[in-house]
Length: 114
Image 1 (tube, rainbow, N blue to C red):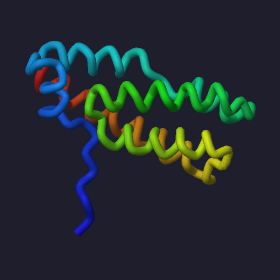
Image 2 (cartoon, one colour):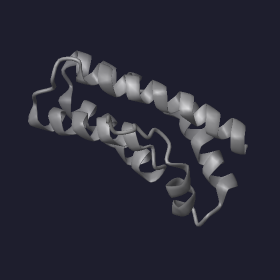
Image 3 (spheres, rainbow, N blue to C red):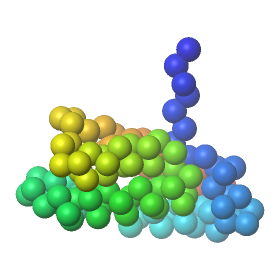
């Protein structure tokens, strides 16, 4: 059976903010409103690997801090590939798909807990 993909690990995320669910929901809302993969995509498109790595690193770090499991995994893989100078075809799209799905899951969490 396929492993279940976790986009938002609510329980773990709440633990990371000392069990303050309201704070966690506020942080998810801020992430949803402020984080966009556009700068990463632009940097990759222009061949600015240093900037692309920085942008991937920011998304990865925020995803880790908020327990956005799949987005963390995909942005880590992308950052690693950028660092190596060899991004697999479709890897950016895979990360962006995880980003989009994560935003949809964040919407549900906010609706249920906001």
